[in-house]
Structure formats: structure tokens, C-alpha cells
Image (cartoon, rainbow, N blue to C red; front, side, top):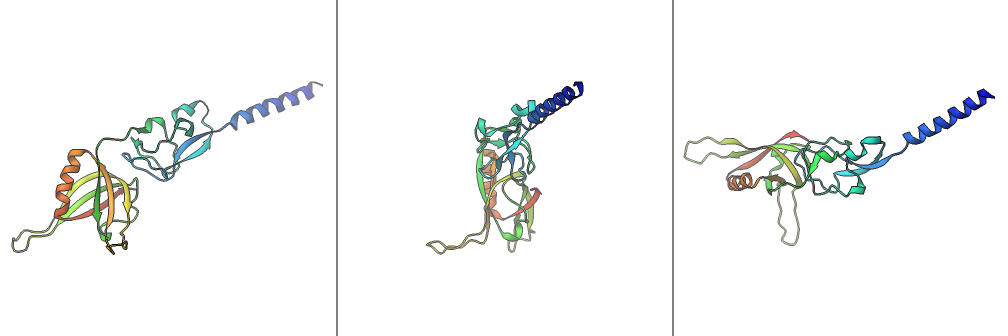
Length: 191
């Protein structure tokens, strides 16, 4: 009789342990790797079911609202859960669009990538000055990228990518002044 009670108790305790271990809740997770400074877009995160136990409050969940429009304070790897401490309100600054020729844009650059931006200026004919390449932005986070476009009613074509980055206002002003003087070159740092 005691053996039967022991088996029944083991089954009841086992069922409770299994039930407690299978309680999951939805939290946001990264769909792709994103660099610090990325403004989260609709396709950057997805809800996943996980069992976090007592740590559930440390992560953002769909029940607390969408993180779209918030800025990442730290890099986030693909599949990584979105901690509440990893996001903040969108930074002040300006989003600047930079035209980049296909041969100056490495493969793999996309939304959330970290890049360094260089500007190459041609030598002035007859001046004897050599062409120069200068670093004009380090560790910039790509907010969006658009492929070269053609067509439309005007028939206009563009053979350059449009790369958008969020910059502090003073850096954005300086960048806007120097970009027309040369050709932008992108180096992929992380992405």
C-alpha cells in the first residue's frame, strides 16, 4: 500500500514540475543582428514564446507594447531576446541619406549594420594635388538602405544606393557640407 502511495505522489509531483516548466510567455526577439544605435523597425523583432521564470520582467513583451521606433542602446544578435535595458527613446539627431556607388558598398550592409564612412575626393586638374581619402564617420549605424532605382514617370535612373544614418545634428551638418565634394566609400564594421 505504501508503495502505491509513493508512486502516486511521484506522479503528482512530476506533473506539477512539468506544468511549471512549460509555462511560457511571449517576449520580443531580434529577427537579425542589429547594431547599437539602430532605430527598431517593424521587421526587426518578432514575438517568441520562452520560459523566463522570475526573469520575465527584465525583457520586453508584446503585452507592454511594441518596441518599434525605440533605439537600441547595445548590439543585439539575431534571435537574442530584447531586454528592457537594451532600448531607449529615439535619439535626437538627423537622418542623413548618403549616395553610394555599388562598387563602394560591400555586400552585407543593411539595416542595423555598423559602418565606417570615407570620402574620396579627386585631384583638382592642374593643381598637382593628389586624390585624397578621409574618414568622415566612424561606427555609424545604418537605419535603411535603398537599392539603385530606375523608371517612374520621369524615366529618371540612379545607379547609386541610398544609405541612411542617424547622426547628431552637428555631425550631420558637417557631413552634408563635405559629401558633395567627393565619392562616399562604405566599410562594413559589423553587420
